[in-house]
Amino acid sequence: MDHSLEILKAIVQAGREHQAGPPLSEVEIFQDWSDRPETWDRRDGSCTRRELLARYLLVNAVLDQGPDTEGVRLLLTRVTNELYRREIRFLHEPHRFFQELGIAIQQIDSVHDAIKHLRAEEWARRNQSQPSKYSLFMENAAQVLGYAVFRWGVPLALPLILVSEASEEERPQALLNYLRTYPSAERMSEQLKSHRRYGLGKAIGDKAAHLYAKWLIHSYPILRDDHNPGWGAFSFEVPFDSNAGRVLWRTGFFLEWADYQDYESWSVVQTGKGKGGTHYIRVTNIREKASQRAQDIPQLWQAYRDIVTHHLRMGRPQKVQIQRIPLALLYMSEIGTPGELDDGLMYIGTQFCFNHDRPECEECPAQNVCRGYQEERSLITWYRT
Ligand code: SF4
Image (cartoon, rainbow, N blue to C red; front, side, top):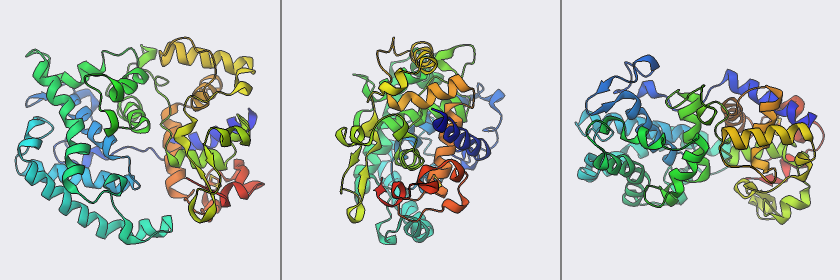
C-alpha cells in the first residue's frame, strides 16, 4: 500500500499544478462570465448560464473519446463559435442543430481539416504514427454525417427532450434538474449511459460519463455541493482511460493490487496483442474486478465502504473493486481528491508517458516513484494501451 500512496501523491501534486478541463473562456458565448461562478444562475436567453455550461460539457465529454483531447476541444470550441455567429444557437435551442444539420456538418468538416493541418504532425511524432492517420472522428470513421448525428446529436437530444417534457418554470434548467434527480454524481454518470429512456447508450463510454461527472464536480462547480457527500469531491470514480491505465500500469500501481496472472486472466493484459508484438493493456476490463489484497487491509476496507456507501451511493459493497482503490486511498490518507488525481494522470499520460517504448521519463514528475523507470524497464517497453 505504501508504494501506491507514494504514486498517488506524486500524481496528485502534478494534477494540482496542471488542472485539466475544456477552455470555456474560448467559447465566445461564455467568455464574459465563465470564470465567475457566482453569476451562473443568471438567465441567458431561454436557459441559465449554468445549464448552458452543462449542455456544452456533455457534448464535449461525448466527443472526448478519441486520441487527441486537445484537438477535440479545439473542434468543439471553433464549431460552436462558427454556428453561433450564424445565429444557430444550438446550446440554447438544441433542435436548431438538427434543423441546420447541413451547415453543422459543413462546419465540423472544415474545422476538422484545419485542426488536422495544425496538429497531425505533432500528434504523429508523439504517438509514433503517420500524420495521415489523424482523425477526431471516432472508430476511424470517415463519414461526417454519422459522426455529427451520433456523437453531436445524441448529447444534444437529451436536453432537447427534457425541455420538451418540462414545465415552463423548469425549462431553463431542464438538464440540471434531471441530473440532480440522482443521489450522487456516480449514479448520475451510470444512468447518463444506461437509463432506459434518457440514456445516451453507445454514444458515451464509462470513461466519458465519469469525465463528465468530474467536470461538473471538480473542474467547474456546476453541480458540486460540499454539504452533500453524494455531490462532493469524492462522489465519482476516477475516469479510467488509456492514459490513466498506462501510467498506473507502468508505475506499478495496478500490480500492487493483483497479480500479473490475474490481469492476464481478466484480459486486462492481452499477451502479444499490442503494436509490434508487445502486450496490450485494456484498462476498461479492470472495471468491477476484485482485489482481495485491498480487502485484507482493515483501514483501506473501512475507507472503501464509506466511499461506496455514502459518497458514490452505490449500496453496501461486498468486495473491493480495483478501479475504486484510488478513491479509498485518497480518502483515508487525505492526499488529495479524485479530480486532482485525474488531472495529474491526464497531464503525465499526455505529456510524458507516451504510448511507445521511449516515453519522456527524465522529465516526468512521477519518475521517482515509477517502478517501470526505476527498476523494471520491461513495464514500459513491453506494454501498450
Ligand atoms: S517515469 Fe516514465 S514510465 Fe513512469 S509514469 Fe513517467 S513517463 Fe511513464
